[in-house]
Length: 50
Image 1 (cartoon, one colour):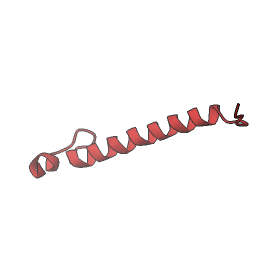
Image 2 (cartoon, rainbow, N blue to C red):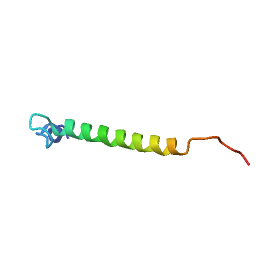
Image 3 (cartoon, one colour):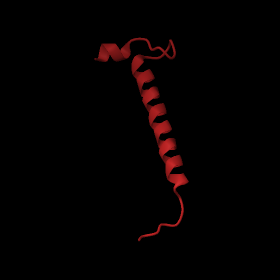
């Protein structure tokens, strides 16, 4: 597994696949966070309990 992660990456020739995977996961989680924040912001308002 270490050998696979140490191979040259696909985003930048000077980086490794491990760095590329870490970057892509960070981008995915950031986008998911922003989407969920936007969804929560849309339903902002007074909470009524019936």
